[in-house]
Image 1 (cartoon, protein in one colour):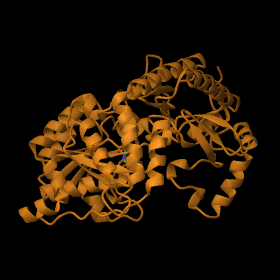
Image 2: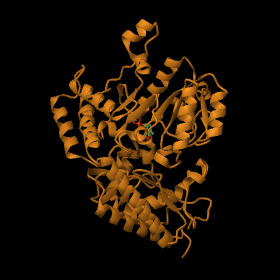
Image 3: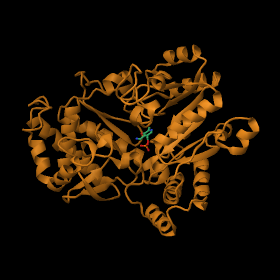
Image 4: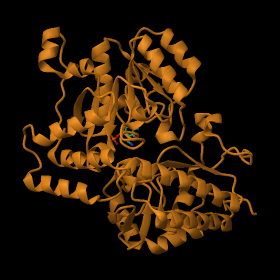
Length: 460
Ligand code: PMP
């Protein structure tokens, strides 16, 4: 059977058999929401699960099925679902009022906490999402430098505003994606990730680059890893030319280490975009960094300099509920071993899933860094007997998994009680433990055997 054929799949039949209420909700959603979904990453054929509740490392769908969850709120849930301290803080804030139309004490505590934990943070401005944080980062860099162009790296994701769409998973030639403006795409320089020579050539040959932005552990939390040598070269080259270096730590912030990737690698960007863990699992983002750059948002400083201030409204910036959850969550990340626990769990899980692959003689690999893991389905059928080194492969190959096979494996894992994201990547939390480890390892083996029965894997 070909992987694109879902109609006769026993895996899909098993999925349909245990998710009837999800199927009914999906039918209703189809009439209301484009593709029946609210985030592109949740697109799944024949339909995705509808989840009713979650706790720690687990969640339950509307049909009563239980899952070990590695979606992790798209990376927001380092502390697992519904950490009791974070829930209590958010509940208290809800009862006191969700919007005061005024400054409030917790936004000061929250900013203090960010500054204490993120090495490069001298000033902080809250936004409502990671997308808004990277958008503001680019605007700050342009206003501060007076330059126009933005340097980005192919496959790195920074949200969905107009500057960030070409070159993430399509349009690697830099052409504009649907609905965006050619001039904006043309003001973005796209480079292959990890190519230090191309980076130096581009930076040396261009006087109009305002900023360079990247995910500091590589695209999609290391699906396409970048080395610390590349980070160091980028820091040096940008500093030399007065280019603002922006770390997008929306995922890595408070996850890789309490101080994020910059804390872990000892490299200071000029600006940092934050979201996800920042707001304890509620909506929220922030841009932080060098004081004189953030001061492009300051009424008095810009007036004194004769600059036009960057406008920044936003109804839910620093909202009281997200602020309370964020202060609570960051306090736990700062004072416990939450990052280290999640990192250690993912490290062991990667190892054990590779053991399952070896035992089942499947020529794939599970890889990743820190608390992430990614599944490489070996689209070019390389011989991986000598081990798998993602740094030796280019971004095109690392992101070339068959989408149909990815979906089928994902569904087979759901049938066996494990939820990974659509790319077959996952986030570990500090709440994943022995039971989740063992369950995941046996679910992975069972899912592989289901795929083999359908002819999706070579016979042993
Ligand atoms: N940057 C990175 C690295 C991200 O992973 C994401 C979201 N997955 C964003 C930016 C955008 O954040 P948000 O979804 O909060 O807009």
